Length: 218
Length: 191
Image (cartoon, rainbow over all chains, first blue to last red; front, side, top):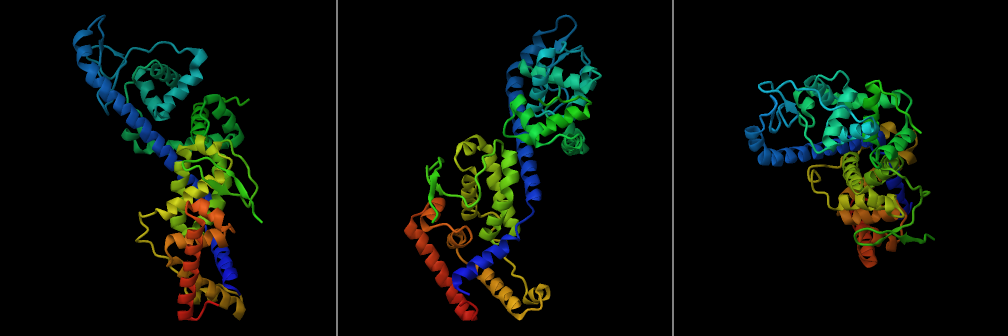
């Protein structure tokens, strides 16, 4: 055997020792999802700090009208920014404006894009006394799209309840279990302007499926 | 004879070699990852000599590729773009590299798994010896050997992928082969 042949033989023999691509793929997707959430959380925290520093004191001092007051943001707290709250009742609020049906899907996407999760929606539904998590996501997404802040920070429910993190797996499982595949995710990604991140699209779609919402793929 | 690929735009505007496999343009990162990961991981395990390190290197490169996916996707050869990223990741890898050790398979284990053929068993032992000596080469020399003898690239193609001159490629390969021969002569296994 020549030295060149020997080298080729050795390299090709050991190429078969490569780690399982499926496992590495899953690790890559998990890393990307984690980075995205960290980015959203950092962005939201930064915005809360800036807005809180500039606005909180003047608003609280000056806005006692119609038996309501504006509550300034408090980072990492369930009293974080700022629905309209009745006085002396920080844990309940009046209902939010009615959702705009025409933009509902975009509002839901905006909700998740901001780093919020299904469990955050459940938490918000309790705060706002809205019966449907999907409607809550629409309402919250409208608030975010309008530049307003929500009463809880992104990922708040995960911080409160570690078990909520497993939700991601449930969403992905729900998506594939109902017969949707990569081609469907690609179509949805185009519709939702999430090209390049099919995992997020699958998660979003999976959340809707778990909420009992039918997804139409063209 | 392999021809040079069209130039691929990246930070240095260097060209990359022509592929061995059929070129398929993937519209999204996820399908690209599914299609290319097995090939990238095989390349990486030969490059690094360690399955865990290969997974780490490929994962790092793929995450960075995702972050700049719009740009990667615009290139003529996203697969080669990412392969270059894997190579660079290996060449610049420091974290955990010092503590990882390449553990060669014991002769007894090779004999145990090999068929009842003295020649086959002997060849496996030789391969194992070679694999162990490869692990001791400087990373650039090893990368040059892998690109020539596993990827079957020309010196010019290797130079473009490693972003060094063709003469440096030849120097790296020559030194690597000399080292392998020297250590083999000392052990009496390399012919």
